[in-house]
Image (cartoon, rainbow, N blue to C red; front, side):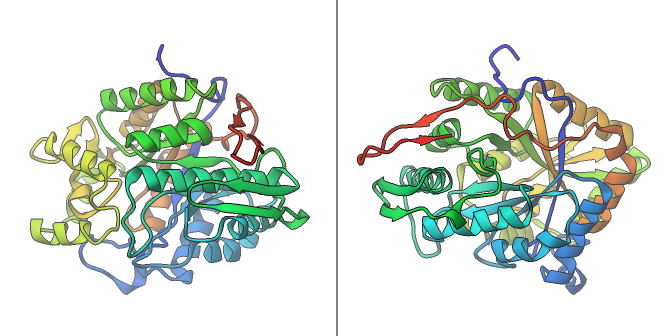
Length: 385
């Protein structure tokens, strides 16, 4: 890990998070939709509140344009029902006018009394096709505007996507006064790496062989160092844990029993990000796997046959799953976002077999955070991070 710099190097524990299926992705068998697992308030809030009750520290509330529920509306409704869990709420940069987005996030942060984290998404809006460089520049401008609104008395910004001059009134200030909620980010292209290195706190990766993950972490560390910063690292991965390895492997096979190549391709290509660089990396990892879909011990890529995005699962008995997680921790990963099918059932199984064996924490707001000044905008106003 000589080339990997971690934002919170002395962190004594791991953030263990679950996944709230807001985007109609919950089922017992992939490719055979069961209305019991529909993306509605009843099912999704049950998954989230189950994770809260069982001791998970955070939960990803994703966003999709095609299917599912509105993320900010859902998060605002469920927030008062939670006890200790953070909400990792996804925002799609460009979807909402930045000052209004800043107000919405600050309001939600107060409802949660600081238990809010943000997942930055930079995908195209429906009907648009911006270049990668332009999409990530838009996200950069959104982040910088949010920071101004949260930390200063005025937004005074002129960029290529936004030109805004506006008083930043008290309701725009978040509960977390030290710069607002932590920013989690996933992306693989050079403009994505640049944006995360400059502005974000936790770099999320999808599962790949360990050597490739180490390389990603090293590359990000080098880029962040150019901004006199460091980031923490997270892994978004599915999990299938059973009492025995044979039962876990059988559960993986059962999950896919209604999927053939044609059906899997149709499901994958529904997603707006189906042709992204990150998805292509998951496809490449799947091509490296053995006949049963395992690319390395206990990392099964078969789930990616019917999913765009995160395309692999940790599969095994409790000790094997724990050992795999500890290997990732040894690499420097400090945040995990797990999921499984059906989400509430697998959430309970992981909490029964593995979660008690992990020292869990929430990602720290300040510890190890390197202050960074955003370059002055053309109007001369910089932003403290």
